[in-house]
Amino acid sequence: MSKHWPKILLVGLVLILVSSCAPGNARYSPVIETGRPANFWAGLWHGLIIVITFIVSLFTSDVRIYEVTNVGWAYNVGFILGCC
Image (cartoon, rainbow, N blue to C red; front, side, top):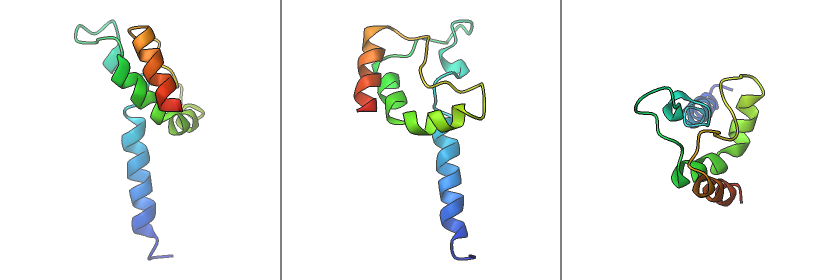
């Protein structure tokens, strides 16, 4: 068991880092002056991490699967491509 703890720690760190880039954070908030809508690249990233985001969203209400504050079709195209 002691030889597996570095792998477990690495997986935990990766999950924390990936979930910090998930939809629903203040980065895209229209209330904050610097907050801009999510664009194509954010949609692509959110599509790529959808499985991890879904699991995290089951345990917290702060993380969503889809960023509602987005630029429109460009975000949607990126999200769909990322999901594929």
